[in-house]
Length: 74
Image (cartoon, rainbow, N blue to C red; front, side, top):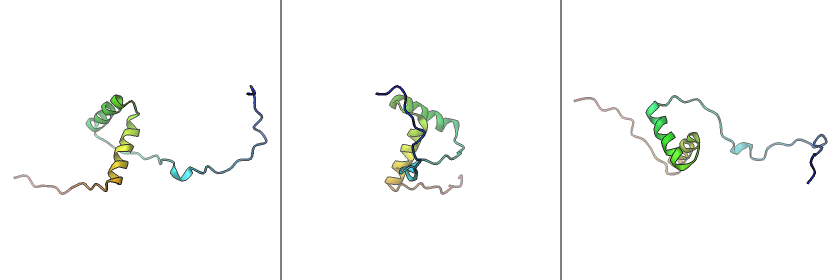
């Protein structure tokens, strides 16, 4: 293998995987939620943001819906 390569003559091209890339978003999460995922991520040996993404991806795949109706105190 060469110790140096001349890349100056290379032509650029579009990334064929660009449509599959992740999009950066800002979310406000409770500290206990972040702590929960950080602990799970440490056990699994993955970054916590990747673990949150995997969890949300599983929710999408399973078509999970959350009940957000508020109950009045009795």
